[in-house]
Length: 159
Image (cartoon, rainbow, N blue to C red; front, side, top):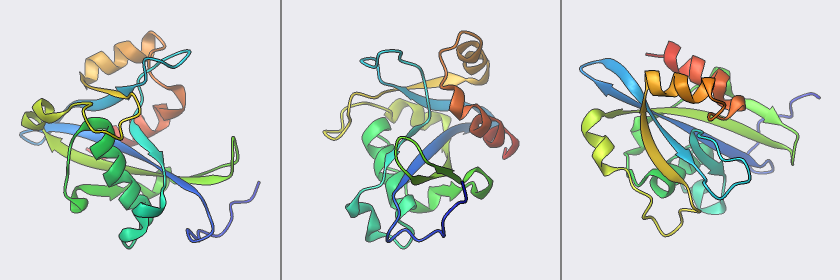
């Protein structure tokens, strides 16, 4: 199916956020979320659907990335922390037609201590820090969302 024109005033969108943890310029790992009440829970990047309130910023998917990060990880990061990975932009047709935008946000090792699931709008997501080795174990044990694997590869290449 052809991708429609990128007009967010009439399109639906979702944003994924890759929270990459760094120390002294080196990638250590990522913050992932899991919804333990799902039928087959697995870890995935933070994210969710766009909402009207996200349009308060010039690029609404950025507003979604900010809001979802705050709700699902407890981290209140400045907007300029988020950088879109344009090559990961995707048009999905199921379950409904919408754009998916992927952002990467670099955080420090000390910010791991600030992650929590206490936000009132958190829909049951449990955030957790994983080292690169631990993420490989999640993948090998089918505990990482398969459709996020390509984004994981892209994020690693952006380091």
